[in-house]
Image (tube, rainbow, N blue to C red; front, side, top):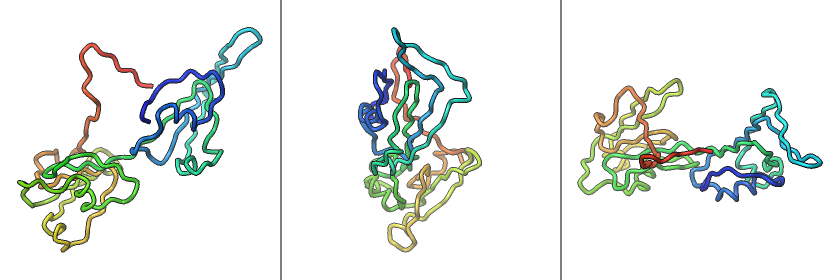
Length: 203
């Protein structure tokens, strides 16, 4: 979401309206929208508003398909109740770093090849030495990374088939393996710098 926030509901609203109030989705949006029903139900009595607490067994977790929501399927645009938590999932980025003009994360819903990623990252730097390309790929069973080595010269000269990247890959152009631990999946901290004394609240 562009502006994640906490809203006080004074009337029934559907998911689409709530997303609009949050500024809409970004280019990083994933494939699903998750709704957690916290198990609290608000209702208005004869004289005042009260809150009825439900048992934890009544809490529900709903996963909606973003494609159905965009298509206008009413089932993918439910009413949001007080206490609900709406989570819009994000795509796992492909990180491109090393001897490129603009090192950056790339978010893509479609399969992305190495050449396409290089183009998005601005291509090779003018002082770059053409060598290896190292791709660190996360393994499903943990944080260890598989290292895949490619020959940059062969790829750029179209002498070998273009390599298809996967979400979560880290591409190091230049082949400097010392930059990253060999047995650890590289992590990136995308959080902004927070001045001392400030408090951060996540909703």
